[in-house]
Amino acid sequence: MFTGSGLGYVLILLLPFLLLVFMMFTQRRRAQQVQALQNSLTVGEEVVTTSGLYGTIVALDERVVTLDTGAGVTVRFDRRAIGMRVSEVA
Image 1 (cartoon, rainbow, N blue to C red):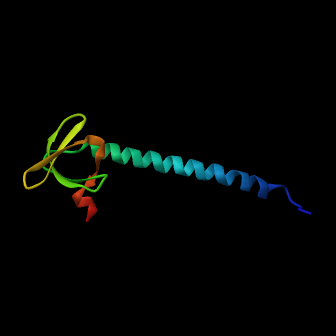
Image 2 (cartoon, rainbow, N blue to C red):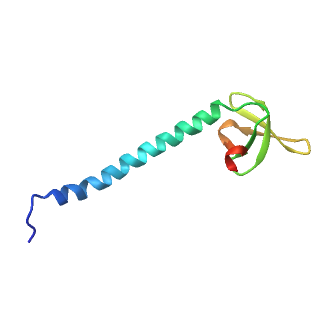
Image 3 (tube, one colour):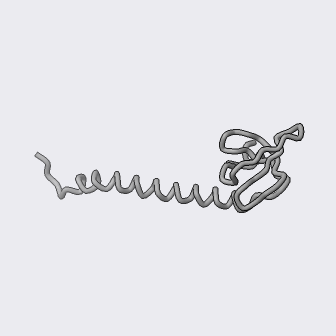
């Protein structure tokens, strides 16, 4: 039925493996970007949490970020909950 060297079969077997490798590299790159963001946070920056809350950083700790959400309301979040800067949203 099929004539050839079997290169097609090898290619079909390698495609899922290549997809997994690609996914691992993109996930690693995203994790490095998130880590860089976490390390570069400073007081006074406007940020968005992963849940969508906008606020200005008023205090930083190793694990806790205190955000001013407006009208003097402050909220404490885990530092890992900061998703991006407001400047990156626009």
